[in-house]
Amino acid sequence: MTSASHIVILLGAPGAGKGTQAKRLAETLGLPHISTGDLFRANLGQGTELGLKAKDYMEKGELVPDELVLDMLFDRVAGDDCTSGYVLDGFPRTVAQAKALDDRLAPDRDSSHVSVIDIEVDDDAVVRRLTGRLTCGSCGNIHHVDFAPPKASGVCDVCGGALEQRKDDSEDVVRNRLGVYREQTLPVVHYYESTGLKQSVDGGQPPADVFAALVQLLGPMSKEA
Image (cartoon, rainbow, N blue to C red; front, side):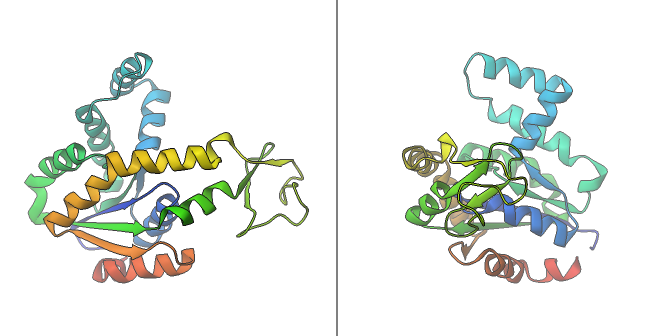
């Protein structure tokens, strides 16, 4: 890697494969993979000042303010392992967060490069992906009725435990999540499109092909890794 800081932002609907691709990209580029879920779990688990503030909002059933989420993020990326950049997964989720992130990054704009890539997958494909998942109640291993079926029906290949569909993988829940995504997060895609930063890949391809497309879009950045 060069001395420049490379920040990769992956966008996409639930089930688009952001987490899988972010982890693989981070490994390939030699950059940390940072997800908002991991940030919350780490701060809550460690009882940090930021975590305690977030917990106070969550216990009241209120949304954690964007500024607090950003404080968690920038506290994390201040670490030495983020000097060369990082891969963001699941952030920003709102236009307000995207604009706040832009403001925070502005002072370092000359020494950093931001890549925003939207993994596009249509709703029906997302529903098929998520509703077909079968999770082992014993070890947590995930099979899929179409893409990774178990050798024996209803039995985990890894530990022999019983496979079941999680409640949040039902079609009603998945379509509700997609509705929330369109209302709250899809505007982020439009925001980055208006700034000229947004690029897209077809997330309906096999995961290996999606990854190849991501690497191609990142161009010289991926070749420096």
